[in-house]
Length: 330
Image (cartoon, rainbow, N blue to C red; front, side, top):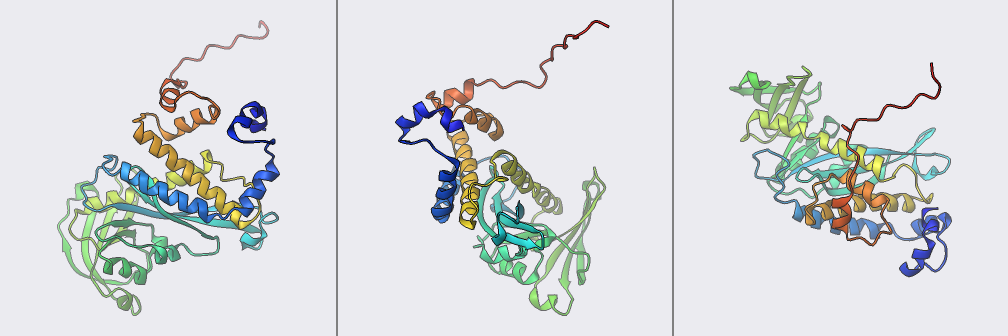
Protein backbone atom coordinates (compact mmCIF):
# COMPACT_ATOMS: atom_id res chain seq x y z
CA UNK A 1 0.00 0.00 0.00
CA UNK A 2 2.84 2.36 0.88
CA UNK A 3 4.67 1.53 -2.34
CA UNK A 4 1.48 2.10 -4.32
CA UNK A 5 1.17 5.58 -2.85
CA UNK A 6 4.65 6.35 -4.24
CA UNK A 7 4.16 4.80 -7.69
CA UNK A 8 5.21 7.98 -9.52
CA UNK A 9 8.63 7.60 -7.88
CA UNK A 10 8.84 3.84 -8.28
CA UNK A 11 9.20 4.04 -12.07
CA UNK A 12 12.48 5.93 -11.73
CA UNK A 13 13.73 3.27 -9.30
CA UNK A 14 13.16 0.50 -11.86
CA UNK A 15 9.68 -0.71 -10.85
CA UNK A 16 7.74 -1.07 -14.11
CA UNK A 17 4.55 -2.44 -12.59
CA UNK A 18 2.80 -1.97 -9.22
CA UNK A 19 4.28 -4.03 -6.40
CA UNK A 20 1.79 -6.50 -4.87
CA UNK A 21 2.02 -8.50 -1.65
CA UNK A 22 1.87 -11.90 -3.45
CA UNK A 23 4.81 -10.78 -5.61
CA UNK A 24 6.93 -10.09 -2.53
CA UNK A 25 5.83 -13.37 -0.93
CA UNK A 26 6.82 -15.36 -4.03
CA UNK A 27 10.18 -13.61 -4.13
CA UNK A 28 10.83 -14.56 -0.48
CA UNK A 29 9.89 -18.16 -1.18
CA UNK A 30 11.98 -18.58 -4.35
CA UNK A 31 15.19 -16.65 -3.61
CA UNK A 32 17.65 -18.71 -1.59
CA UNK A 33 17.73 -17.36 1.99
CA UNK A 34 21.49 -18.03 2.18
CA UNK A 35 22.05 -15.01 -0.06
CA UNK A 36 20.74 -12.77 2.73
CA UNK A 37 22.57 -14.77 5.41
CA UNK A 38 25.87 -14.25 3.59
CA UNK A 39 25.10 -10.56 3.12
CA UNK A 40 24.42 -10.24 6.87
CA UNK A 41 27.77 -11.89 7.60
CA UNK A 42 29.53 -9.35 5.36
CA UNK A 43 27.82 -6.54 7.27
CA UNK A 44 28.80 -8.16 10.58
CA UNK A 45 32.49 -8.01 9.66
CA UNK A 46 32.23 -4.35 8.65
CA UNK A 47 30.26 -3.36 11.76
CA UNK A 48 32.60 -5.19 14.13
CA UNK A 49 35.56 -3.37 12.62
CA UNK A 50 33.88 -0.01 13.16
CA UNK A 51 33.01 -0.75 16.80
CA UNK A 52 36.38 -2.27 17.64
CA UNK A 53 37.33 0.62 19.95
CA UNK A 54 33.83 1.27 21.27
CA UNK A 55 34.02 2.09 25.01
CA UNK A 56 30.45 0.95 25.75
CA UNK A 57 31.57 -2.00 27.90
CA UNK A 58 33.74 -0.77 30.76
CA UNK A 59 35.31 -4.12 31.65
CA UNK A 60 39.08 -4.40 31.87
CA UNK A 61 39.42 -7.48 29.67
CA UNK A 62 41.81 -8.24 26.85
CA UNK A 63 39.61 -10.68 24.93
CA UNK A 64 36.40 -10.14 23.00
CA UNK A 65 33.20 -10.78 24.96
CA UNK A 66 30.37 -12.70 23.27
CA UNK A 67 26.96 -13.20 24.84
CA UNK A 68 25.22 -16.36 23.64
CA UNK A 69 21.47 -16.84 23.74
CA UNK A 70 18.48 -17.76 21.59
CA UNK A 71 14.95 -16.51 21.06
CA UNK A 72 11.91 -18.44 19.90
CA UNK A 73 9.83 -16.90 17.12
CA UNK A 74 6.26 -18.16 17.34
CA UNK A 75 4.51 -19.15 14.10
CA UNK A 76 0.96 -20.14 13.22
CA UNK A 77 0.76 -23.93 12.92
CA UNK A 78 -1.96 -23.78 10.24
CA UNK A 79 0.18 -21.56 8.00
CA UNK A 80 3.61 -23.02 8.85
CA UNK A 81 3.03 -26.79 9.40
CA UNK A 82 6.71 -27.52 8.66
CA UNK A 83 7.69 -25.70 11.88
CA UNK A 84 5.67 -27.87 14.27
CA UNK A 85 7.09 -27.52 17.78
CA UNK A 86 4.38 -29.08 19.92
CA UNK A 87 0.99 -30.58 19.19
CA UNK A 88 -0.67 -27.19 18.65
CA UNK A 89 2.31 -24.85 18.29
CA UNK A 90 4.88 -23.97 15.68
CA UNK A 91 8.10 -22.01 16.04
CA UNK A 92 11.67 -21.53 14.90
CA UNK A 93 14.68 -20.47 16.90
CA UNK A 94 17.18 -17.68 16.26
CA UNK A 95 20.52 -18.48 17.92
CA UNK A 96 22.81 -15.52 18.45
CA UNK A 97 26.28 -14.59 19.63
CA UNK A 98 26.27 -10.86 20.43
CA UNK A 99 29.53 -8.95 20.76
CA UNK A 100 29.24 -6.53 23.66
CA UNK A 101 31.25 -3.81 21.93
CA UNK A 102 28.53 -1.95 20.08
CA UNK A 103 26.00 -4.76 20.68
CA UNK A 104 26.79 -6.17 17.23
CA UNK A 105 25.66 -9.70 16.26
CA UNK A 106 28.90 -11.62 15.71
CA UNK A 107 27.47 -14.98 14.60
CA UNK A 108 24.02 -16.48 14.29
CA UNK A 109 22.00 -19.31 12.83
CA UNK A 110 18.37 -20.36 12.54
CA UNK A 111 17.25 -23.75 13.83
CA UNK A 112 14.12 -25.72 14.57
CA UNK A 113 12.09 -24.79 17.63
CA UNK A 114 12.52 -28.39 18.80
CA UNK A 115 16.30 -28.16 18.99
CA UNK A 116 17.81 -27.62 22.44
CA UNK A 117 19.84 -24.43 22.85
CA UNK A 118 23.01 -26.28 23.78
CA UNK A 119 23.45 -27.68 20.24
CA UNK A 120 24.29 -24.17 19.03
CA UNK A 121 27.63 -24.50 20.86
CA UNK A 122 28.63 -27.26 18.43
CA UNK A 123 28.45 -24.83 15.50
CA UNK A 124 30.63 -22.06 16.96
CA UNK A 125 34.28 -21.56 16.03
CA UNK A 126 35.84 -20.47 19.32
CA UNK A 127 38.47 -17.72 19.40
CA UNK A 128 41.44 -18.08 21.71
CA UNK A 129 41.31 -15.60 24.60
CA UNK A 130 37.67 -14.63 24.01
CA UNK A 131 34.87 -14.83 26.57
CA UNK A 132 31.57 -16.65 25.99
CA UNK A 133 28.82 -15.71 28.43
CA UNK A 134 25.68 -17.87 28.58
CA UNK A 135 22.91 -18.91 30.95
CA UNK A 136 22.66 -22.33 32.59
CA UNK A 137 20.56 -23.69 29.74
CA UNK A 138 23.89 -24.10 27.92
CA UNK A 139 25.62 -26.00 30.74
CA UNK A 140 26.97 -29.15 29.16
CA UNK A 141 30.39 -30.04 30.54
CA UNK A 142 31.54 -31.83 27.41
CA UNK A 143 30.88 -28.70 25.35
CA UNK A 144 32.31 -26.41 28.05
CA UNK A 145 35.48 -28.47 27.99
CA UNK A 146 35.66 -27.93 24.22
CA UNK A 147 35.66 -24.17 24.88
CA UNK A 148 38.41 -24.64 27.48
CA UNK A 149 40.58 -26.71 25.14
CA UNK A 150 40.21 -24.03 22.45
CA UNK A 151 41.92 -21.55 24.77
CA UNK A 152 38.74 -19.52 25.29
CA UNK A 153 36.87 -18.66 28.48
CA UNK A 154 33.26 -19.25 29.48
CA UNK A 155 31.05 -17.73 32.15
CA UNK A 156 27.78 -19.42 33.03
CA UNK A 157 25.46 -20.10 35.95
CA UNK A 158 25.77 -23.38 37.82
CA UNK A 159 22.85 -25.76 38.03
CA UNK A 160 21.51 -26.64 41.46
CA UNK A 161 22.34 -30.34 41.16
CA UNK A 162 26.04 -29.94 40.34
CA UNK A 163 28.27 -32.33 42.32
CA UNK A 164 31.75 -30.99 43.11
CA UNK A 165 34.61 -31.02 45.58
CA UNK A 166 36.14 -27.78 46.85
CA UNK A 167 39.91 -27.63 46.60
CA UNK A 168 40.48 -24.22 48.20
CA UNK A 169 38.91 -20.76 48.58
CA UNK A 170 40.22 -17.31 47.73
CA UNK A 171 39.77 -14.19 49.83
CA UNK A 172 36.86 -11.99 48.76
CA UNK A 173 35.54 -8.53 49.50
CA UNK A 174 32.03 -9.33 50.70
CA UNK A 175 30.99 -5.68 50.49
CA UNK A 176 31.12 -6.03 46.67
CA UNK A 177 28.45 -8.72 46.76
CA UNK A 178 30.87 -11.64 46.24
CA UNK A 179 30.29 -14.19 49.01
CA UNK A 180 32.78 -16.88 47.99
CA UNK A 181 35.40 -17.56 45.33
CA UNK A 182 36.29 -21.24 45.17
CA UNK A 183 38.44 -23.51 43.05
CA UNK A 184 36.60 -26.78 42.58
CA UNK A 185 36.72 -30.03 40.68
CA UNK A 186 33.69 -31.95 39.51
CA UNK A 187 33.12 -35.17 41.42
CA UNK A 188 30.07 -36.61 39.66
CA UNK A 189 30.57 -39.98 37.97
CA UNK A 190 29.93 -38.60 34.45
CA UNK A 191 30.81 -34.93 34.84
CA UNK A 192 34.28 -35.70 36.25
CA UNK A 193 35.10 -37.47 32.97
CA UNK A 194 33.50 -34.84 30.75
CA UNK A 195 35.36 -31.95 32.45
CA UNK A 196 38.49 -33.27 34.23
CA UNK A 197 40.08 -29.84 34.84
CA UNK A 198 39.63 -27.37 37.70
CA UNK A 199 36.76 -24.88 37.67
CA UNK A 200 36.13 -21.62 39.45
CA UNK A 201 32.89 -21.30 41.43
CA UNK A 202 31.75 -17.82 42.49
CA UNK A 203 28.76 -17.04 44.69
CA UNK A 204 27.41 -13.53 44.23
CA UNK A 205 24.47 -11.63 45.76
CA UNK A 206 22.89 -8.77 43.82
CA UNK A 207 22.87 -5.79 46.19
CA UNK A 208 19.61 -4.40 44.77
CA UNK A 209 17.44 -7.50 44.29
CA UNK A 210 19.17 -9.70 46.94
CA UNK A 211 19.09 -12.55 44.44
CA UNK A 212 21.85 -15.14 44.78
CA UNK A 213 23.83 -16.27 41.72
CA UNK A 214 26.39 -19.07 41.46
CA UNK A 215 28.75 -18.78 38.50
CA UNK A 216 31.11 -21.27 36.88
CA UNK A 217 34.09 -20.20 34.79
CA UNK A 218 37.48 -21.43 33.64
CA UNK A 219 38.99 -17.94 34.01
CA UNK A 220 41.07 -17.72 37.21
CA UNK A 221 42.96 -14.46 36.57
CA UNK A 222 40.23 -11.80 36.71
CA UNK A 223 38.52 -10.51 39.89
CA UNK A 224 35.39 -12.35 41.00
CA UNK A 225 33.33 -9.16 40.69
CA UNK A 226 34.34 -8.90 37.02
CA UNK A 227 32.92 -12.38 36.39
CA UNK A 228 29.63 -11.27 37.97
CA UNK A 229 29.62 -8.10 35.84
CA UNK A 230 30.21 -10.19 32.72
CA UNK A 231 27.12 -12.25 33.41
CA UNK A 232 25.13 -9.11 34.18
CA UNK A 233 25.87 -7.89 30.64
CA UNK A 234 24.23 -11.06 29.28
CA UNK A 235 20.95 -9.16 29.36
CA UNK A 236 22.17 -7.12 26.40
CA UNK A 237 21.26 -9.99 24.08
CA UNK A 238 17.78 -10.18 25.64
CA UNK A 239 17.30 -6.48 24.90
CA UNK A 240 18.56 -7.05 21.35
CA UNK A 241 15.99 -9.80 20.73
CA UNK A 242 13.22 -7.63 22.16
CA UNK A 243 14.31 -4.65 20.06
CA UNK A 244 14.56 -6.56 16.79
CA UNK A 245 11.15 -8.21 17.29
CA UNK A 246 9.42 -4.91 18.10
CA UNK A 247 11.02 -2.65 15.51
CA UNK A 248 12.01 -4.84 12.56
CA UNK A 249 8.73 -6.72 11.93
CA UNK A 250 9.67 -10.36 12.41
CA UNK A 251 6.27 -11.18 13.86
CA UNK A 252 4.44 -11.20 10.50
CA UNK A 253 5.95 -12.97 7.50
CA UNK A 254 5.56 -12.59 3.74
CA UNK A 255 5.62 -16.14 2.46
CA UNK A 256 4.83 -19.47 4.10
CA UNK A 257 7.89 -21.57 3.35
CA UNK A 258 10.92 -22.06 5.57
CA UNK A 259 12.96 -20.18 2.98
CA UNK A 260 10.66 -17.14 3.23
CA UNK A 261 10.82 -17.03 7.04
CA UNK A 262 14.61 -17.36 7.13
CA UNK A 263 14.93 -14.71 4.42
CA UNK A 264 12.94 -12.18 6.42
CA UNK A 265 14.90 -12.84 9.62
CA UNK A 266 18.21 -12.33 7.78
CA UNK A 267 16.88 -9.13 6.21
CA UNK A 268 15.87 -7.84 9.65
CA UNK A 269 19.39 -8.50 10.96
CA UNK A 270 20.88 -6.79 7.91
CA UNK A 271 18.69 -3.73 8.49
CA UNK A 272 19.91 -3.53 12.10
CA UNK A 273 23.54 -3.83 10.98
CA UNK A 274 23.14 -1.19 8.25
CA UNK A 275 21.77 1.27 10.81
CA UNK A 276 24.66 0.45 13.18
CA UNK A 277 27.21 1.00 10.39
CA UNK A 278 25.58 4.26 9.28
CA UNK A 279 25.39 5.49 12.87
CA UNK A 280 29.12 4.93 13.38
CA UNK A 281 30.34 6.21 10.00
CA UNK A 282 28.25 9.40 10.11
CA UNK A 283 28.91 9.89 13.86
CA UNK A 284 25.20 10.09 14.64
CA UNK A 285 24.39 10.50 18.32
CA UNK A 286 20.77 9.33 18.08
CA UNK A 287 19.91 5.80 19.14
CA UNK A 288 19.03 3.12 16.59
CA UNK A 289 15.30 3.26 17.33
CA UNK A 290 15.13 6.99 16.53
CA UNK A 291 17.07 6.45 13.30
CA UNK A 292 14.65 3.73 12.21
CA UNK A 293 11.71 5.99 13.01
CA UNK A 294 13.13 8.67 10.75
CA UNK A 295 13.93 6.24 7.93
CA UNK A 296 10.47 4.67 8.05
CA UNK A 297 8.83 7.96 7.05
CA UNK A 298 11.60 9.08 4.69
CA UNK A 299 12.24 6.12 2.41
CA UNK A 300 11.62 8.16 -0.77
CA UNK A 301 13.23 11.38 0.46
CA UNK A 302 16.20 12.64 -1.58
CA UNK A 303 17.73 14.53 1.37
CA UNK A 304 21.28 13.38 2.30
CA UNK A 305 21.16 10.87 5.14
CA UNK A 306 23.24 12.89 7.60
CA UNK A 307 21.05 15.95 7.07
CA UNK A 308 17.86 13.95 7.37
CA UNK A 309 18.84 12.29 10.64
CA UNK A 310 20.52 15.25 12.30
CA UNK A 311 17.82 17.81 11.51
CA UNK A 312 14.80 15.62 12.24
CA UNK A 313 13.57 16.78 15.65
CA UNK A 314 11.73 14.18 17.73
CA UNK A 315 9.24 15.05 20.42
CA UNK A 316 10.68 15.43 23.88
CA UNK A 317 8.89 13.63 26.65
CA UNK A 318 9.31 16.54 29.04
CA UNK A 319 7.35 18.94 26.82
CA UNK A 320 4.26 20.05 28.70
CA UNK A 321 1.05 18.84 27.10
CA UNK A 322 -1.55 21.55 26.72
CA UNK A 323 -4.62 21.12 28.86
CA UNK A 324 -7.51 19.76 26.80
CA UNK A 325 -10.48 22.11 26.48
CA UNK A 326 -13.77 20.91 27.92
CA UNK A 327 -16.50 20.04 25.46
CA UNK A 328 -19.33 21.23 27.69
CA UNK A 329 -19.41 23.63 30.58
CA UNK A 330 -20.06 22.02 33.92
